Every structure is written in C-alpha cells, then in structure tokens.
Length: 138
Image (cartoon, rainbow, N blue to C red):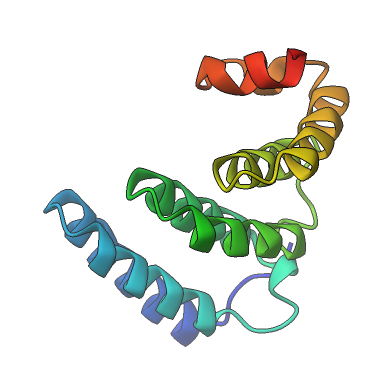
C-alpha cells in the first residue's frame, strides 16, 4: 500500500480532523464538504492509498445519516476504485447495494446484495438494518 507524501498526509489529516469536529458538532453537511476536499488531495490512482477506502466509506455513511441517497449512490461507485489491497469480503458491493436499494433501484440492489452475500458467505447482513436481508430473501 502506498503512503501519502508527508505534506499531503499532514493536510489530509488536518482536514479529516476538522471534518470530525464538524460532524461531532452536528454539522454533517459541512463535514461532507471537508471529506470531499480530502478526497481531492489523494493522488491518482487513489486506490493504492489506504486512506481512500475509509474516506469514501465515511462519506457514504454520513450521506446515509443525512438520507442523501442519490449522492451516496454516486459515491458508492467510487468505492470500487479504492482499497486495492483490501481483502475482498463483499463490503463494497454491500454498500452499493444499500445505496441502490434506497434509491429504488431494486434490480441493481439485488445483484449487489447477491455478490456481497457470496463474498461474505452471508456475514454482510450482520449488524445491518434487517430490511436489507428481508429484501434479499424476497
């Protein structure tokens, strides 16, 4: 896994810390703006940096909290260009499935849930909203 160059890493971490502060102060929208700014700091190809996966996951989680599902869906597409060295357990597909589900893209959601289920051997549904498993089983 590649390391961010020191000056970029320092700026990245500063922005993340500021984003966390905004989030904890109830300013989730401001937090997302900062997270997106941090995303732009990561050089291409972004997927070779461990920060890329966690950053996109945080953006999507915050967008879900705000129920901004269309934007979460767009970011879910980016998760596939992150975390190249991560062990693949279907997490990326599950995140994409949830975003598609919330937008009513049920065929796409079912396909993603199916991939996630196979890769995780069903564990992807643990600790998640039961509506996703109910949908998958239907």
